[in-house]
Every structure is written in C-alpha cells, then in structure tokens.
Image: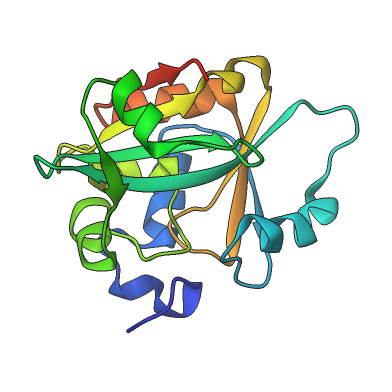
Length: 178
C-alpha cells in the first residue's frame, strides 16, 4: 500500500499540488512547510519548533476519520492534545457509537491515506457526504496547521481562510464544544 507522503501524491484523487493550486486560485493565503513524514501527534511535535511564529495563536490539530453503525462518515478535527471519548462524542452528536474508518474507506470518502487526515480533505469529502466537525477551541486561534493531503507537508493558514475554503467546497463545519 502506498504511503501518505508526497512521493505518492499523484495517486490521490486530488493531489497535494492540485489542492495548493486551488487555494492559490481562490486567493487563500498559506505558508507551506515541508518536513519528514509525520504519522502521529508526537511526530508532529518534533517538527513544530521549525514552524513556530512568535506570538502566534496557533491551532495544531489531530484528525479522526470515524464511522457510525449506519455507515455515515465523519471527519473530526481536534486540538492536538485533546483527549476524546468516542462513545461520549457519539452521544453528544446524536449518532450512537463511533469507530475508526478503514484505510480503504478513508481513500474512498476523503481521498487520502492514513497519516494525512486533514480538514483540507473535505475538498473530496464534501461530495462523499462526510460530516465535518471541529473543536470549538479553533475559534480562539489565528492560524491552523494542517496537512495538504500528504503527511510530509504542513500548511499554516489563517482560520478565517479555512472557513472560506470550507464554504467553497460546500461544507458547513460543526463546532464541537468539548
């Protein structure tokens, strides 16, 4: 199976380069960082210092691709250190038990591989009916850091530009108060 790095970006429904070109076309500003492939929050923390902007109120994320018993799909973006109880989350959003989706379903519904899950995957997820939810803590941040569909790149984007992106792809984000 192909990895989630840029080496395999042309095997995705929307490549990382095509996503960045779309962001450019829409006039959305971002800073692109290239780094070693990141698979976990711990991996991400190992490269954060190189991306740090003094005084910036940053929202660094972890992302969960989830499914419920009715086979509905969810992308949940949380502050990277947030602990989450999937049973409680399922109850909070009124869908019952949630579980992690498979790598095959991740590719089918979000057009990405494990390790590259990101709000930017809603460029594919919107048409697949994926429901997008984001930690309410994002509202206190100025910038969000997320993968552009591959795990060896990170984009830093103003949170306001993320909202514009989501609107452009037809997604109404649901804010989670956790």
